[in-house]
Image (cartoon, rainbow, N blue to C red):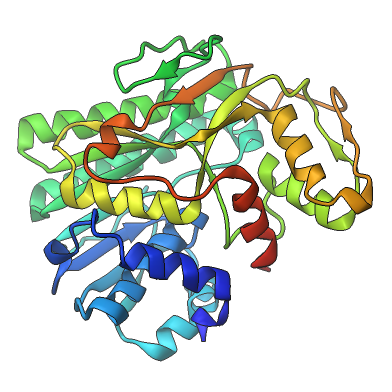
Length: 349
């Protein structure tokens, strides 16, 4: 059973018990999600399926997938237990005709820094054309809620530690190919606000801090996954940069509950930060925190080693979640526990 993973079940139980999510609004509804085989998408789908079990909501979930084989492997236990989950083959860039869904969650898109550098044009195309297609479908089918998964990177590279609210200005350098990612995210948020204003689409955006927890793939190339793998193996943690970037982080279960809160309670055309404000630290500090989880292994932290071109410029992204917290949401898991729970739940092959 998929809930045999004790940590995953604890997370899903907490989400299903969260009264700040407007669960009654999801009763007997249909939910369409893109990016469902990604880390955050998996957690959202599992949260809805578990809420079905606990709350008897009758939610029907449909995920758009590029690889049905991968999707059926990731959700094999869930599919054997319930018929509440189904798949549509395709991509957001070439979106098939969709029936009406009550709610739409758009999370598909590239997530790897190195890809943004080597394929900046494709990064922009996937984000903008995919979001335009999803919003056009929403304009035709009139869902009750639409949420776009954006990123903390839309704020660019602030260098002070001041708290960042949703109206904070941006200083993205458009000459850097790596910035194809945050700039495309900004345009997609503008599309959501524009469709909300012009066509009455109930579109909202959520700016997620870097998110991790149970469900990370073993070959995930992002920094948090590299740190965890090195720590488990007892190897030194090696940073390509000086590790000066400071940012907030978010646990997967907290991200899922935030998305469902914005979907059920958010205001049309607006954006919301989602972060655990207590996690604000530098990448170097985070590396040392992970190394300290295994003191018996004597793990070192080495900086400025290797090619740093794939990484974003130094930034201090101290996100404030005050606006989202006014909807009732609250982060529950701190940085050390995020790592412990990710590692103890094991990576996915």
